[in-house]
Image (cartoon, rainbow, N blue to C red):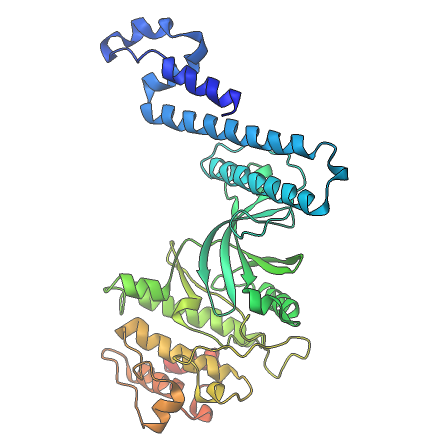
Length: 395
């Protein structure tokens, strides 16, 4: 056990018990000098004392461990390259732990400016430091091709900012090795930045750390719509669900007006923020595509069969009307909790002659627009989300 930690625990173990409340004022001057700070805090708030002790123990442990590794690094030029890398990895791990602790302090309003040294490389994702700046703190979700983490932004921590976290998306290992992966992620970042809109997730940056390309995005608080529908039976058809539909019309309409197709719309890519706003995610790691084609942006054919149009399932060129079909499926789910074709892929539903049910309470223009959006014939669907909204509103 490090000497500093042993002394800290010894002082706490030998500190006199707090005086009873009635005698607290008279006994306050009798606390031992070795534990005066902890004793006074304890008299006011036992919970505060526990948090103070925990923070002091964390600081001592991290300092001691880092000190040991720094000692090992002295004169390390003669060491074998493998041993040097192991020491660098260990240092990176502890720097990550310290940054994550300081981020929690910043979020609680107790941040302080930091000056930290160069980070090493870390193979484990949690605690890994990307570009000597972003510390992966927790996994938030996984998609078909990428993993999203909550991450500490070192620059925000150093500035003692009150919002030290961002979201970082990395490709799965298999996709990260794809020769076009880097270009695909850069294309997604570029498109989403160009699409700046209140109902589309904000992308801050695109970068690469070694073989790890990643996108830095705003960190959202709330839940995806698939989780919300699963956890809240009263959500379907509620005013909040209608608000989400309106926000989706706004965000998707803006994207289509800019010539950008999502091509993998689904409940899991729609995020309902804590303040009630809807955000559309993932433009378009699965389908970096513009109307008419984008020659410098590779595509990865990954779609969700439940929401994909027949044309998508047959591998035909992407079109905004693919998004309109998926949007029609999503509206049914948000209003009724049921998929219009019982989650049967569109090609199978078409072969079986399935027809989407009528949703009670919708106006005639809404019913007609929704039926057109779900047509298996691409030519019968509204041209894009803007046209869909106009038909939905009876214009």
